[in-house]
Length: 242
Image 1 (tube, rainbow, N blue to C red):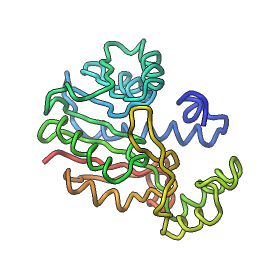
Image 2: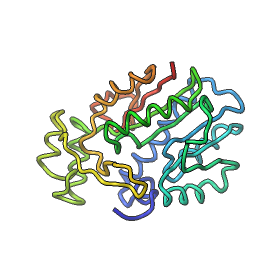
Image 3: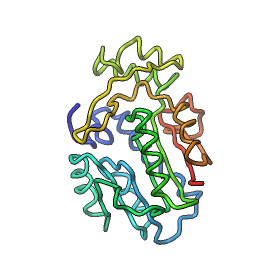
């Protein structure tokens, strides 16, 4: 896999994927219309990628304290360039020095699907440490089972037939709600295990894990918010710290 983060998402050559990625970010911010966000709110984008979410957020909320956490050096550099015109954004490659209960809102998008169970637990613990009591956590993950898995699988097979996430057998297993449990694992330069492919991630299992750490208040879907989960490609959770 090569290219910048933007070239793999919002600037992908495929117009449908570009549209879905654009809607993914817009729908992650939908909660702003129904949640009262006070002036001076502190926001953390946990695993910010190229910082596109915070760039868009600055256009909606003019006065807030923005932080971006990204452990991957190449993505941190992309975020730094992307956020140059967005005002003061604090970028960090580690959250260890951040005090507990520091943020009113924490976003975590397109992160958990890449993590093995033990890392999911660690990240949930860390986000729970960073968000203030009663604070908001917005989590976005891909929908990789049933009809969305089939649609995504066909798209991937047209691009890289035979790969783990473009194998007819694996795609069909996910399409019937039984995604493969054994997923290819890789190691980051920092020594963390991760899954590159989305296939094999089951948001149903993940939602049960989330409830161990947060109170889940709302679930919504993208890109067709008025339709049920079976017809959408992304799942969002609005959670609060107990």
